[in-house]
Length: 134
Image (cartoon, rainbow, N blue to C red):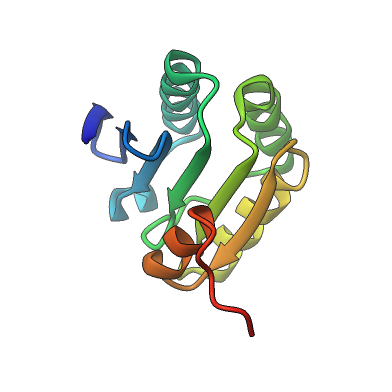
């Protein structure tokens, strides 16, 4: 069962109790996100991580993520989430190149196995261990 944990104009965070996944979905409104608002959203994600820790996987749906995370905020984000990360995280890539690059730079400092995907079905298959062998 998937339950909505928190929702704002920028982000929806749900918990899938059947698979033990936290699912984060950013909205196109991230185009207008400020650093302070971004930090509030990350703290909301962290609280969901804490509430369900330990959980199996994180699915981050970033197709509509447009905010560019500066280096200091990348480091801050990693510090906020590192203690509560699951073993596996799947990230569906942002359409906007610079935003995606800033996501990758943020995640490189996190202690989780991360794989990037072009679409949600492939990301889900990897998380449940059913990815196709290429």
